[in-house]
Image (cartoon, rainbow, N blue to C red; front, side, top):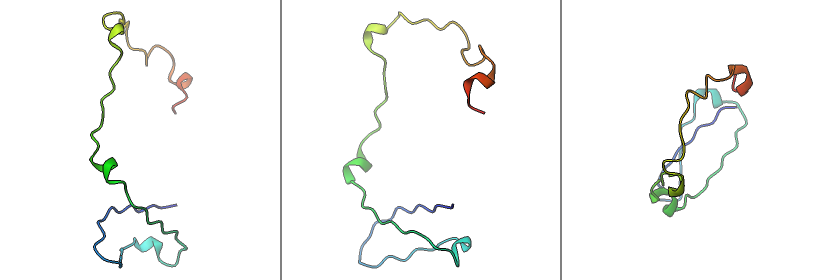
Length: 75
């Protein structure tokens, strides 16, 4: 499966898109979805730990190399 994502502002009722050559003679599904403007302009919030944990957590080394990579299940 191949996906082509295009974000475009529509200024009339016609929309023409170019598709990759590999799409020719294939069945495709076309979805047209409006994007919520508030989601586009919303700033990304940085996650922060609770203040009551400040100074109570200590790093004791490299947790990723503390076990074999096979145990992480991320091959």
